[in-house]
Image 1: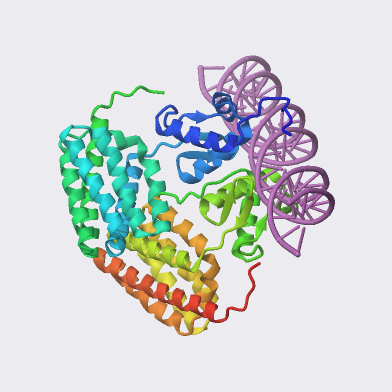
Image 2 (image 1 turned 45 degrees about the vertical axis):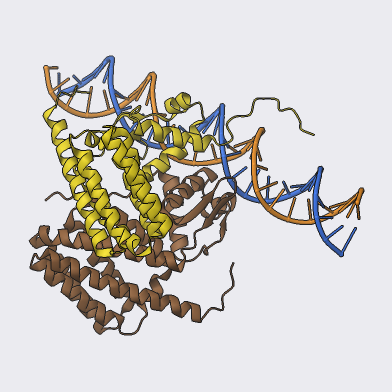
Length: 231
Length: 231
DNA sequence: CACGGACAGATTGTCGACATTATTGGGGAT
DNA sequence: ATCCCCAATAATGTCGACAATCTGTCCGTG
């Protein structure tokens, strides 16, 4: 016999929702870099209690999306240009290792999925759909992580990726980037298919070196268009 | 000369003490692997409020030292043997990269400090002081991270290290390990002094490959002496 | 006019109380 | 005897209140 509650039940997972929405808000730019995150304000805005916000902030601090200073509150963490490059460098190192392992361990199912992603990528390139291509790009890499069966490295790489969202959209837009990117991905796939660890790591590193170059290009572009407002 | 600081994320006063003491307790084995961490109990034991414990648990979960399941509480995370090896593998990859960078960037001050550490290491080896050697080992590696000026990678490696404390003491005790380890460290130092990136990365990887071997040896040893009960 | 101390407002840190959810153990029906 | 359902219990999730701390401003002093 279900007893009627006196009050509409609050979200049963307020903490989780606070975390997800805050994270989403930061990723989508609703909360700007260096913006102060006042607990009470955020709590109101998200419709949850301050406790939930606080827990979310601790998590995001550990993840590097937010900085949390004692008695001085939280701000959206601004990933410096230098740090963005550092992140990309670490990512290249780790993903190279993952590609190596994936080459040794890839199953037919892994290869089938990857081939499918490549096929879809070609379609997006033909349609000049850079955004769609970007999604597929993420899927491609994640599929390799899964094939490598290396939970530790995968977790780290995933965490790094979430930190570098700020510049992601800039890099997508480089003219001609998608075509080159597609060829690089094909090279990676070929190496995986051939179960050649050295080639796989090499192809992945070459690919991510190109991504680093694109990132530098994007950063310089932002500097050149330095028309940002004080405050 | 200004170096990029390796900033540990800090949290408030009581929360901070709760975090540190819990972490210490897990590292030192006061809290056993898979042991359930009931918030109220831990709060009493540490003499802080439940809120502080909860915040600490969130951080430790994010760091990988405890697992936190919704509505089901926290337990000390048992790092599986496989995971320990994974961690060591990632560490080798990242520290190899850091050694490479350190070789390019090392200043005379860096090299002087490292040489000093090596000198002290020799003394500990002569005195058969494995524990003291282990401390110096940590200092040696951290000094290289600092020289590499790569905050992102340094933070990750530090976090990994904290997760693999469980087996650390086992690995120290392997007979003859310290002597070999010393020689490996000397090789790393020579490469850094010569500002030879390739040699530095190679020496570091060789060193950590040996550490991985020792880890496997320690794990097998524990299996052979498998007379302990799951808590 | 510059400097520094102290006050006021705002924000974070901590705690205890209450609601919600999992777990355990017992009782009854088959 | 076994299984299922349900109360009792224990632990977690959430909230509001209060204390501690920080920040900016105003005012008196030199």
